[in-house]
Image (tube, rainbow, N blue to C red; front, side, top):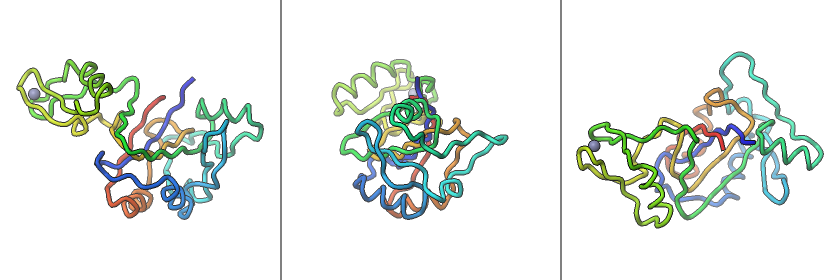
Amino acid sequence: MTAHKLILLPADPDCTPVSSAALADTLQSIGLLGAASDINGATFYPTGDRFLQLITFLGCSPMIELEPPADQETLAAASRDGRFCHAFLECRDTLRFRSDPRTPTPRCPQCRAPLADWPTTLKSWRDDPANDHWHCQQCSASGRLSELGFRKTAGFGRTFVEIRGIYPSEAVPVEALLDTLKSLTRCAWSTIYIKE
Ligand SMILES: [Zn+2]
């Protein structure tokens, strides 16, 4: 099974990563996250007491489960399937690309032609991160992979706040949350929705 995820990440992939401790402290101090907890050795964060003020839920009365299951076995399965709201933080030195299985092929920013060899381009970059350019076969433009747009279904980043237990596009971070992340990292933040 996979989970729907709301992922917050710096809009600029070159934004210098902060430590995960600093990120956790900040998000706990504003009440988005609660105390660190553990699922089979992985650190996760249950929701804090202001989670529902910092993430707005659209749509008609969505089912939002905030309480983690008490026993470890149910907890692991519920986390994997995204059956309750909780977060994982990731801060890394190297760039990571995260995408939804249904992310559309990105388009050339110059001529809007789909970059037909996208899977090959992405694989080349994964094999060797120095190969970080796309090339348009239609108009010969080129640029960095991280400059491409993915309509909120994918993104490149070094810092991720991953929130599970939401429905795609129904959970939206409020400005105050994005401003807090911006103050911490000195970069504007954006939002993507993926199923992983
Ligand atoms: Zn082009």
